[in-house]
Image (cartoon, rainbow, N blue to C red; front, side, top):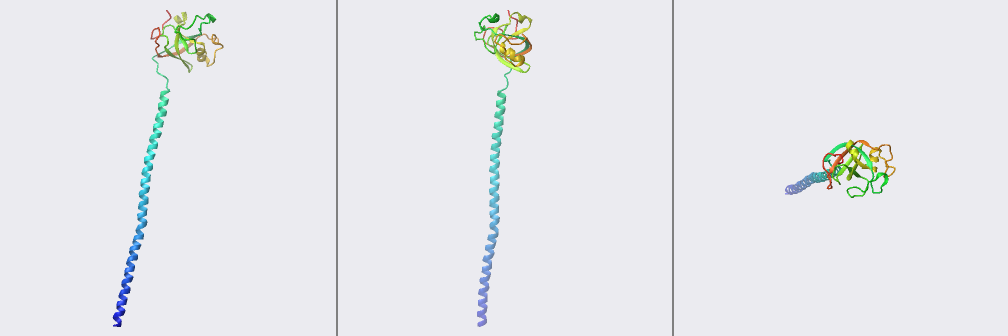
Length: 211
C-alpha cells in the first residue's frame, strides 16, 4: 500500500516535470523564432525603403535631365538667326545727320535719324535688317539710307555708320561721328548677311550699283 502511494506520487511529480519541460520547450521555440521574424520584418522594410529611394532618385534624375534640356534650349535660343542672303563686299563709312558737315547730304532716306547701326545700300529695301562681320567682329543694323553713290559701281556696296566701321576695323571707337580716326576709308572683305527684308523702297537680292 505504501509502495503504491509512493509510485503514485512519483508518477504525479514526473508528469508535472514533463509538462513543465514541454511548456519550456514551446516557449524556447517561440523565443527562437522571434528574432527570425524580426529580421524578416527589417529586411522587408529595407527593401521597401530601397524601392522608395530608387523611385525618388529616378525623379531627381528626370528633373536633372529636364534642367539640362532647358539649358540646351536656352543655348539654342541664343544662336544667331539664319541669313536669307549673304556675300562679301568693300564697305565705306559715313554719317549724314542733316548738319551739313563734311558734305553731309541731309537726313537718311528712311526717315529714321542717323544712328549707330544705320547703314546705306545702293539697292536693298529700306529697313532691311543686315549683319556685317569682319575679323570675328559683328554688328547687326538696318538699311536706313541710300549709298554709296559712284563707289557702288566699283564694288563698294555698303556705307556703314562711323561707329560700326571703326569697330569692325579694330574694335575701337571713332574720333568723331564724321571721322573714323584711321587712314582707312574702306574695308575690303566685309561679310554681309541679310536677316530680314525691309518694307521700304528698294530691290531684294544681290546688291546693285546705285542708279
